[in-house]
Image: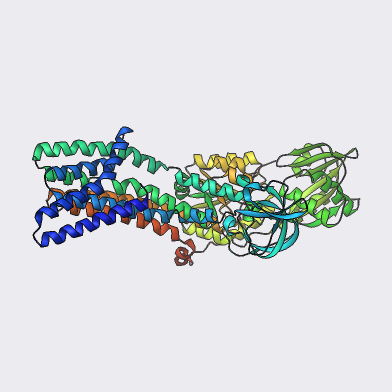
Length: 638
């Protein structure tokens, strides 16, 4: 039955109750009873139908208990109780449905942001098409104020774009040629021409909506337990009611017991909180893939960070090129040519630097091999190019003399990552690359600790000097440097074996194994890359660490809200049962209190949709994380 139909039936039966009360005042008892019976039948009919449908599925529902109470009250001539109980249950169900809709308002807002059409070039003309007709490769035109309908690469124009639907950040981002745009975002001002790379259900925005829908439908362990509990509890109440009647021979007392014991508020106590919590996250750019993820995040006491791309911006720059014999640009060109096939941050940085110097990278690579966590090897014009770590140099018998090692260590102590470059097994140079620590990183760690996280760990493949600099700056408890992806997995396993409940946060690419090993994995969204969406249970879409602090606070608040609801629901039933035993609570008044308890549970959950961890955290500003000096950095030997 729709909400409108429930509202109409509730209005009709409410009016009948009011008229019957007036008739009672004027002494028309027979007419009063007729209207009360009519009211009970109108309001009770959909309840009984629902109970029968559930019974056909071999399940006991709350509607079954209420149906027994309504019919029983009519049978013994308690018309007032029967009409009031049916009216209150129907009206309560309507209000409950209306209020529950608010917990899903975030998802509805997201869906409402979905673009419906796009302007594209077809056969040299501008045409406006339905979004379903746009295909990959179309050149899409987007003007100021319009929604972006596809994911794609800008080929012409500049614009400020509001990406709040993807990242949760409402501050417009400047975009220009070669930047990427995402479906669902809005051009604040400017004009763009974009080549469509993803359309329809393949866009990041469509995937976000799909994941949030799936997340809100998924069930936590608590929800599953409550469902199992209700499936046993409800038939048990029917059995107990029969025993109550056999002992008391009081049908009114038995019916009151039946209604009061309904587990309505208990059944919805967990799911309504979870749905509201996930909706809050989606609104603030935190994509949570299910209620179970929220529960796991709320329990963590250890957070493991990747460094590059997580604690740092992931936008490193070449700060120095030291060549031994050859020209600096010649060395950079050799190295960048080999790194063209690399997806690693450092490799891409070297390629970017070469392009900025207008160096040609068009030579054919032969026998190219990416050595995971260590570097890359390739043959170019029959020259063997080896680029990477000290370990890679050692494994290939490439000598690093004292002067080169001293230069490398000096650069590392200044916060650089050094990349050794050799041609035909002879060291030809060292390229230094540095990345900036995210401005919100220190505050995020402070908030995590203030919220209950006991230890912060950093695992990085970078050198120990750079790792030490970052750790000292951010107040990180444990640092492990020069780690390969498998080393990170081992370290997380050790933390878990030691009793820690671990959350791992990385960029979702090289850290995927470690993210999968942790109790719960989080990924920096990187503006919504596919691998980030698929790897982790929680994705920070705006690529900002402060969203992690919000997600953690939100998870703890959601679980606390769920416990409050459960406690309140159980407590209400216990108090009502005591009232029934003491003959202080009767059928109609018991039903009223029961429905109010359901509404209060829902309203308590609705508070989560407005939860703001920034406001909640203001009271903890005095908590500080001391910067440690002389930290002992651990590193895996390579």
